[in-house]
Image (cartoon, rainbow, N blue to C red):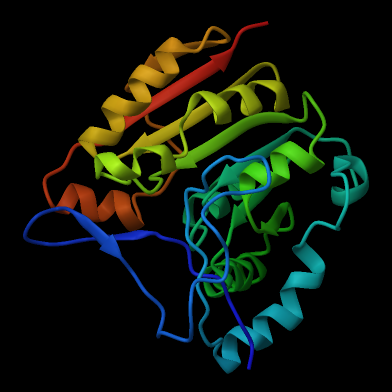
Length: 253
């Protein structure tokens, strides 16, 4: 049996707008704890499930070409050129990552997620569309940033429609936190930026407060990236009548 890791992406309930866990068929207990090695609480939960034959085929064909190697990330070695590198955290099925890579062929886009079928689908789409500057890491973005990425590596970081963890008892699982902002600030180049988008009002208020409190970021609100397609959670949020909140946090020189 093959395994994939299912993140705690949430599916909006049409009646309430509240997202609920989208679960894989049950195949045993949770594989990974909710706390990583640094003590930071993960913003996703790892679960076991079966991989379809199509996904296995895509993994075999595309992952060797696009997955970054183990060890420290050295962009010129991993990507084969010197170019600005952009990180997308929680890329899902990759609609935004693909759009950015197509719009910016002179950049390299590193997409991070834990959901194997979604990553495989993204790479299959990249192959069909001739996108060669899209790369992937399957795993915990915080661990990647903390353990394998040197300071001043990324020109930008994208965080689109992260899990809002709406219950107060789960607030510590929200990705935007003082800890992750410190980490991102150290990995962005001076003048680099973090883009955050959410359709969840509570998460928007949380992100607004945490971003405003960070001394190294200058925050503006309201500008939607023109290259990002209306897809996935954004499309569902708009269809449900929810507004989209956009943040751009620029790292001060």
